[in-house]
Structure formats: C-alpha cells, structure tokens
Image (cartoon, rainbow, N blue to C red):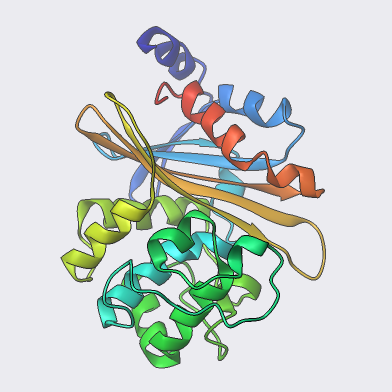
Length: 263
C-alpha cells in the first residue's frame, strides 16, 4: 500500500498553499470519477502533514448546499443547546407520509442519522429555534453561515452552502475537539457517525443529496478515517444526473480513499 501511495504522489502535477494547508493534486483520483462517468471533486485532509490531497481543486473550493451532511452539525447544535437530552431521546416524525417508509416512525438521532431521516432532523431544528440555530452555525464556522428565515429547510434548499474543503476543515475541528461545543455533544456525534470499525481503522461518514429547482443535483459523502493514530477528514461531491448516480456516492468515495492508501 505504501508503494502505491508513493507512486501516486510521484504523479502529482501541482502543489501549493491555500487556506492554511498545502494542497496537492493527485491525478489518480480522476480515474475514480471517470470510471463512474461522474463529474465531481474529492478532498482528503492529512491532519498530521497539514496537507490536502485533492482532485478538481476549483470545484473543491466551490460551495454547494450541504443537504443531509448538515445532520452532523444539526446533531451537534441540538445536543449542545439541550434541544434533546441525548442521541436516544425519541423525536416525533410528524405523522405525514414520507418519501421513504422507514422515515415514518418516531426515533432518536442515533437511528435517524443512519437512515438520514429528514423529518426527525427537521423536528430537531424546530426545537433548536432560528436564533439558537443561527448562533450555532456561526460558532461552528460552517460554510457561508447563512440560514435565512426558515429553520427546518435551510440546509435542504439553501441559503446555507459549504465547500468540500470547508467540510474537511469542519470535520477536523470536530474530531480534534476544538469546536466551541459541549465535549459530550462532540463525543456523541462521533459515536453516531461511525460506519465501520476494523482492527486497523475507524470510518465515520454521512451522505447528502441536494435536489434543487434546476439540474444538476449534488451528491455528497463526507467523513473521516482514523488509523495508525492519525485522522483523515474527507469530502466528496459530484453532479447527480439520474437517481442511479446517487448510489455511487459511497462507492466512489471508497475508491478515492483506496487510491490514497487509506482503505
């Protein structure tokens, strides 16, 4: 694996500094998108080296609506202000028909984040309230920090927007515990975002799918890997041109992580 990673670094075509970190373009990542027929970007932040490995840097710095990736921040803010006592406090979904039948049930954040339950997180946002939500988003320094006047839609429709680079920086602060949030809230969110744990790594993540008034839609997968006492936050986004493309979010992300020797 180290040999593969060394080869990738040898293929690098540009290295420069941006936003405090060195950005390094890795052409091998392009294959992950081309083979899937997708246009997008991938960023991995090597915290120890203070270096970001990137494909499509121009897009990596472009802000998009975060969609359900905001559930990470929403959970943090909700726990921090006491809108819920813990990740297992049951919230009502509202009783209305939902696009996914599995959403039509009351549940806590631990379960809701796994199935990306929109109405549960909308209820959490309403409990937080517009002013506490605005303050929380600013405390987190999350993207453009704009939430408008509708407390339960701003991450789905805008005006909130964030770039892939900013996603990795936010997740870095979350993992290292430097966000101005209750440490219990930070620990709880790290716990409920865990996707996979092996003897050699932990993988945390959250998908997102922005459906706007005009195409393209935007697919997200953000998270981090902990391995060998190091942390590697990452963010993927790409254009979704058909519903089938949405299923490619995690597979493309995992291929990018493999190309960088992290999986």
